[in-house]
Image (cartoon, rainbow, N blue to C red; front, side, top):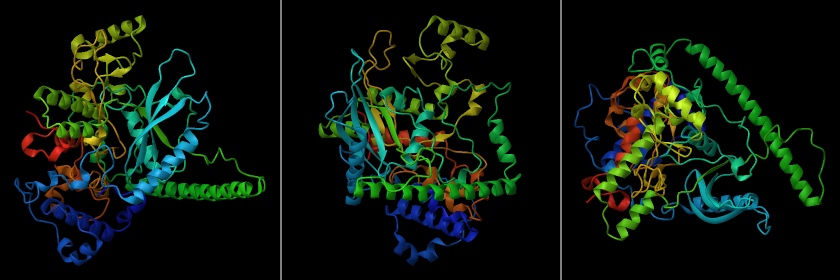
Length: 532
């Protein structure tokens, strides 16, 4: 199961469709948790009388027939074993991946025979449902600059990819975080910059969200009295239904306007493809253009450039240990666990907003003076406020209590060994020894991630219920608590008040980390770390 796309959110349209979809997903997860399979369309039709029953009455038991089962934590199938290739991926996906690789070669590698061409393809790293990742090496035209390895990720279906755009936006939230994979600005590699894409379908579930990329330098103000919930969240919860009609009408008007823009662009793309197709057939252009291709972003190419970590992903690392019949020493296991927890901190408290030294781009005299002044104004001791920095990277930390109210509540939804990458050692002069013997882990692949907003309708939280790989769902997704809610409509506010069902947050990320760094008694084959 995976997160439904916006065009598949038909259950939002009527109350009956919402209730039917809600109960159908309940039935899928009941099968998943009890017998380890997810029913198909035919089985769901045959079993409709079972899953259309009313909601359970009362409160969930502390030991329920679902939460206590071990099947949700077991490997889904032999096809899911971690390896250097994409085992379990069908032939159709393989064909799309090959087509994507060819597109990348034709555009990104350019005149490969030219001595001045700065890019060299090293190897294809892998592909999944959202994209294809390829390792390249950049050779700067400036003398004395060492070659730089990096990874480019492109969409499987074509150059235009909403999934790639979303992943890039999410990755920017983690800018400068020491335990998250960092993206690279295209200009650093001599590539042209890209403007924001203006022709995406609007997201009905997030119609009034004001999400930002998180890559700016934003200060989080202190509050005189620490609050359990931030003022924005508290206000939204208390005013869930205020002005709802106006917001819905505004969204519907925006949706209509945006759809017209997209239809116009699709027609212009058709005209452009016909013109260039005729030109290729006849050796000259056929007709004149009365539109500006740049204004409609016709040559859009979505891709992500990110740093390359030399030791691959954690899944391959675990597989190599399993082949060698080696166990992970406790010290290494706990250090890995600490790395992943710091990655979770970056998602909850982005370093570009919370780190005390976020404005320092280098250790200059001016930077040192500014840091000393901030410490004096904060009135707190330097060890608690200074923060660790290595180059441009800011090491994550827990902010003071007076600032924790502004946590992002960003959930990764896809933490597994293949999305955790093993970096190198920090053994340069001046390092504190944290990673002199044990490499640093970094969390990557933020394609499914989302900032969970408060005070939303039940349809909003339901839409994230399938956002994970099989075998990696969190209790907020598979728990029996969902069956104690009677679905009314997608805008009802029942789930927002539940302690488990749909209550995604930083704890969901911690659960994912626990599924990776799991103790031996819960280890699932060679996919997970075990200690001696």
